[in-house]
Length: 328
Ligand code: URA
Image 1 (tube, rainbow, N blue to C red):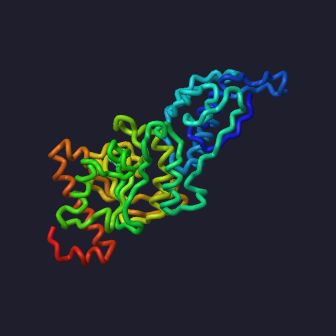
Image 2 (cartoon, protein in one colour):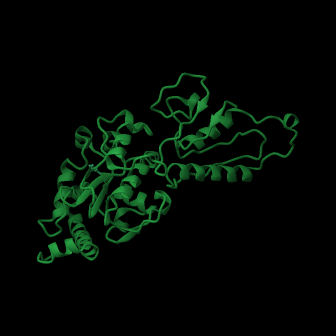
Image 3 (spheres, helix red, strand yellow):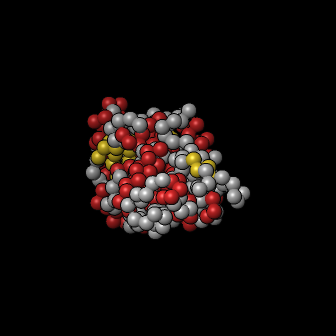
């Protein structure tokens, strides 16, 4: 087997199995052992390695399909990996898809920065790391990274899905048509009184544009979410407003859709994700792009904006005083 340093790359575990698959284990005569691993034992080891990988990549548990193992001596598993192998470089499967590596070099896996050991967690430092990030394939098609923007001590952190074309071009979040609607939702003619210029921070679940505005894939979200959790940790917003499915499902670790989850205030604890105990109220609502497409979503979004205002009034005396004379 080639030398392999197991790091925290999301592809590591899959890649490790891939390597093992290609290298039969030594025969019992060579090792002196004659008890083979059962499929159950292999599955337990795989679960442990997956969990370790999730912990090292920021404590965010990925959803995976079941592996299927045999009781055989050789590792002839038919893996159904949830994380795709590096399609472009299958011989060096532990190499990130964005890094070139000559063939037949030893396979070393680089440990990407995680949310547990950053040297500098200022917004600027996080943005600089995002700017040079190559943790997933989205780096290949982006024009600009889009870390986020707004005030540094926000009442509300708004979290969308991922940059679109306008955001990719400008490097700023929510600047296209959906962004303009988001700005109007947040202000609601002064009745909600929120804006990225005065009291909000706006970010996305993934920081690079998915080509053609497709949904971000689970492995792209897993790779990027440590940046988001570091931003949350640094900003400490009074409330998180998730718009749309990816941010809501990711932060709440839920699989139900936004239609079911919207409108209910919950709490983002972030214990596992963020190396600490956080209790930040979280309100999911529809994504402004969906509201643009579907007029009937305006009414529930307005209900959600009112819920947001009421909760903020409980949490922030200054905001409550400012809104006191503005009827809902
Ligand atoms: N949609 C998003 O989710 N985020 C943006 O920044 C723009 C559009």
